[in-house]
Image 1 (cartoon, rainbow, N blue to C red):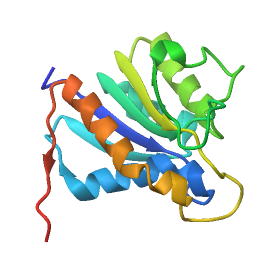
Image 2: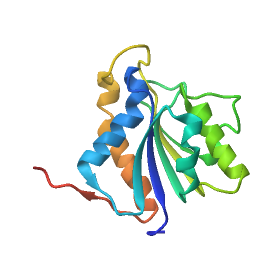
Image 3: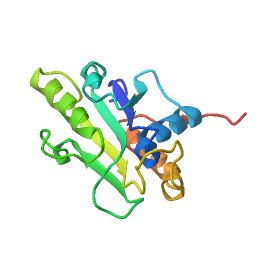
Length: 165
């Protein structure tokens, strides 16, 4: 598994407060850790279906996102591929139906990740506009980072902490 192609994908709209948590966690991962060559970290923003080309060439996908799971704000979720909607009938974030459709289209043509895990958090506020996470969600960024690191370790990757400068 250590040579499998792994994609860590942060998604969300950074203009809508907690909706951008996936991208903010990805930025923190890039700032704090070093990753082997087989691990790519990508800011997927709100690209949705445009991510299909990115998804085609990976073996394992870890998505970081705000998830509307009807829990208390700050609730952390771990979803696997089978937990995601099979089509456009359900929407758990402002953009994830397009991401799910991109995954489904990849499967249809026989490409894309073998495994998919979503590390998500229930947002507190996704109403326009604001570049900062709410205090409650911002306080959970480190826990989300550790959850992503744990998912990578399950896949045989042990990211190294960058030295502080």
